[in-house]
Length: 483
Image 1 (cartoon, rainbow, N blue to C red):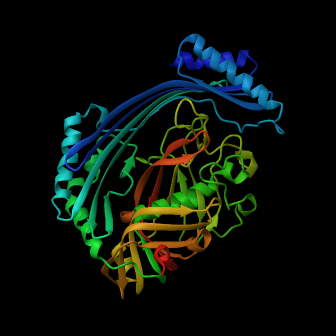
Image 2 (image 1 turned 90 degrees about the vertical axis):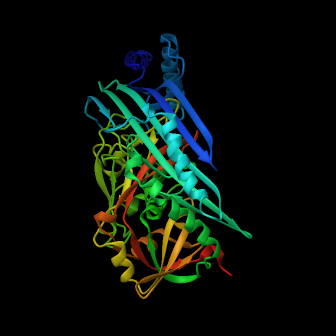
């Protein structure tokens, strides 16, 4: 693959490209799932190909191929240059890239146990053991469990002399119990919803999460929700569990800081952004308790890597510091727009047949101090919500509404009755300005989201979001079930 990648950039340069980079990519994916005591899925897929990106006459061109013969690669590189030259006829400004140092390196996700070497029997056996416990709870009608393992091997080279090899391994684990009673259906998930937790690790992820140990509780909570009272409506203090807060960060913090969205050059799937350029370093995004970082170096993060798809090394930087908005996610092309002399390294593509675009890395709310128990005891009248069930946010990432699987009423510092169908709504900066407490490092979890969609043609990318439970004052609660 290294030789083919070099051939692609040499061909592009010979055809008139002033810059070229190429990525040879191999992706392996395994999905294993069980449902109600039976194996529901055992799929393995493989994808191999090469993509070449060029600048010619000041404009971008991109082409890809699964034909990895010499002729196939040369044809793709020539097509990329042809596309760039055609684009140049309608381009208003020539592309300018921030400099990057030449890199010759190899990077690999640290893993303890290769998930692709673990037998299917062992994986299915664990899922069926969990399934048995879930269905042993009277009232649980559907039990589902799943494992997902992805390995991406990539060779990158550019006309600037960089040659970078990377192997990224991601593992996901999760299960859910669905209870049915009367005209109601309720669901509980572990470790979190929508196929569970994803981390850039090996099979050791199954030891990091007490999967079997929590199955009984998850089943019982699903059933208990059927008879639980409806979450009340009104303005109340809200405490969010860390996985729900991670999704809140993803939707209302991560997407609006993607600089291509801000500039309007990418608006598919998630829209543009309310964080327009005049707000950079001049906008009160949240309270002084709100400290958000972007970090592509965090161990185990689903948004962790060694180098982005422009050959820029991974790094960490501030997005919001003591409530003030201070940073975006940039590419080599957009870095100069906000006065940076180098990219922060956020350009990624989800495969060989997609052009790299700005993507979230691990965008996280940094911890402060204290525990969830202390936070609850310090709350007089509020709602504690766990595990995402639904979300909706407008095209500028400003107005939002979220629902969770379960809630708990808090009265005079005590967690009291269970509540079903809890929801809340807000306006992004007003919501983050109402944050008056964030729990400490012991409560902080780096959650993984494997399915962030962006671009056209669409691309799916894994991102990470760290959070500890946090409190927000005077939030609109119960909005989705208003009388």
